Amino acid sequence: VTAPSPIARHHDGAIVKVALTIDAQGRASDVAVERPLDAALARRIEAAAAEWQFTPARKAGEAVSMRVVLPLRLEGGQG
Picture (cartoon, rainbow, N blue to C red):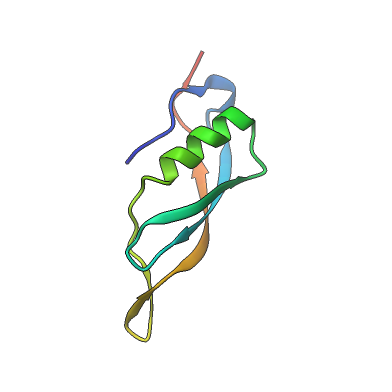
């Protein structure tokens, strides 16, 4: 899993919500952090999440695109 790093110690343990669209091939797009803690961290999270691979949603047995919101706990604070 690609993770944003480093994460400042004062954000360690924080939960952020990441909205994204998962397409029928499991690729993430339109990634956006909802209510970001800071702009630079949000950009790093969005870049990392855009590289993640997912299992797509299914409807009537067919893979479909779906918009989701993932809660992420930030860990590994430095500094």
